[in-house]
Image (cartoon, rainbow, N blue to C red; front, side, top):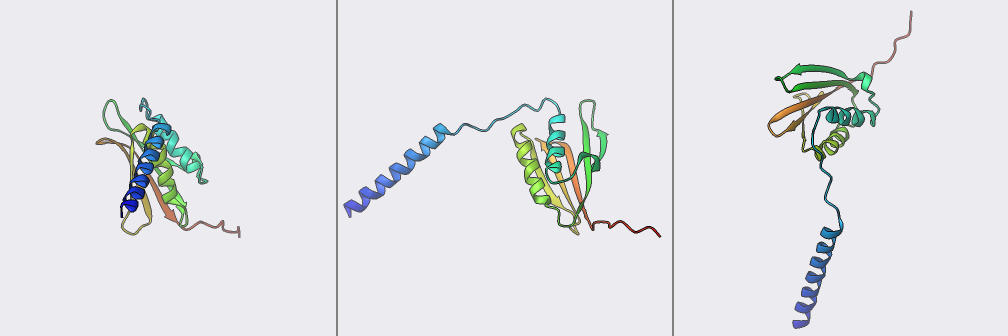
Length: 141
């Protein structure tokens, strides 16, 4: 019985030592100050471009919130099988170092995924991916 306790204690001690070593060796994640919202715009456009959506396909609507903040709302048509959840993850990972949270929600009939990018209580950007059937070019008569 004493031998089991000693071996369990040794394993526990080794696990704690390994955890401490990892804490000391792994650098903390980089954080950046959000000086301008152009950084978020680049995260959005680069994340979408990585999945085949060029910036030219984005519809952007700008609305002035107050004298300091202008919010951009992005809308893009995507095919039904578009990996919207992966884009959501990519945007969230790109925005995380700036302290920006990205929340996603589907509309009622799940024909669109809306992402909201916020810093604290302030809504900075929205991205709406609207799912639709791909349009086949019609032959000319």
